[in-house]
Image (tube, rainbow, N blue to C red; front, side, top):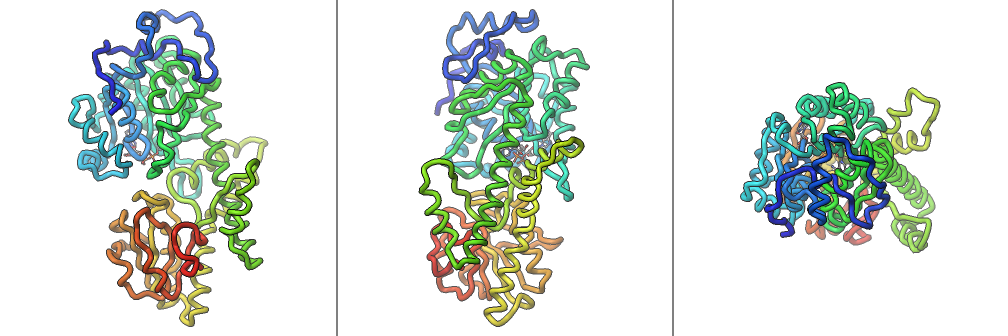
Length: 469
Ligand SMILES: NC(=O)c1ccc[n+]([C@@H]2O[C@H](COP(=O)([O-])OP(=O)(O)OC[C@H]3O[C@@H](n4cnc5c(N)ncnc54)[C@H](O)[C@@H]3O)[C@@H](O)[C@H]2O)c1
């Protein structure tokens, strides 16, 4: 394990020292305000870059982002105070019943027995932290408006408890201006002025749960501080948890960069769906066409068609851009249309399912339909915004008897009804199987013997082409 020893004196001062080469833009530090002087003096004397070693870091919100962040900081030598308002989540973490990669599970076991990793629901712990990293959710409402209530509550609690000398890093995806509105300005109203006696930055998270290829350690991190001291301090804190840090000129640039990234994905997924439908119209295999197009070595990036978009990012983040533009003169019709198309996609899947059933002679009413994999992506149990929820709902509304199987999701609430995962789906007699998410290592070879299969991924993955309609 890469965790360093903790002999180093516990001090945030190290966070403010000059970065090492290769960190992106590295502005020269302005004269150091008196309240922050001891930090730079100590780190200057040490010479080496200790990262967060010896520093106490509170991580607020221990979900899909916060828990791996806390573990990464612990591995880098920080003492971690993990804070989550959900006692259930804390229990699940203690029991190891959480979605983590195998290496992160191993780190969690070590961290918990190290004495340098504690879990609490008490926000009072914030006052003991040298640095605070905020990773709370930023969902949307049912009407696709940004729902910032949780973020606002978390920031307000943090501002109330902030102490001079703290570094505060917001990582939750949100609208442009959030860091200033919810942290920098309210802190200043309390006399905690960024760059003078407190440090504030926005550093968006890029974690891809369940993906072993792209982990935080091999992914660059964008950091935008309230000023150069804040940027450098945040970069020092986060550098060991990323492949490199890319400094930008302020929190707003970092906030917009995150929105740009995920709007790009949303629009491209919607486009892939549209082009895949066009392929089918011409009697072509979308996957074969996509593979051919993807041989172009520049100016093209393959996005795969599918049942829609799920999770806490793609179905939500673009609305944080659209919400921020709503009252101004700039429109974003491409983003608007892409999001509308993604919302409509599960209904299109159901139209196809109904068509297949009609072709098979039954129609949806009374048909037994089995949805395979309901998590929004492979390898996780996250069903937030999963297209499978809407697909099951719409099929049931058409009179189908719906079942699902997902080794990661034991039960699922659909339209007020709780369904249980079918343990061995290969034994369930059904009129149609809808493949939604194929988890790694899940043997679906038996599908080849099922009469009607709708592969919402358009043949992507390991299924035989015969089974993928
Ligand atoms: N999930 C992803 O793949 C992903 C990837 C990149 C960025 N993000 C962004 O990161 C942020 C967090 O997302 P997530 O998926 O980790 O959310 P999550 O729902 O998995 O976890 C959030 C945690 O915060 C806790 N919480 C809520 N309010 C709190 C408070 N006031 N104090 C302490 N804890 C509190 C919740 O109980 C929950 O455990 C969001 O802005 C999201 O857009 C998510």
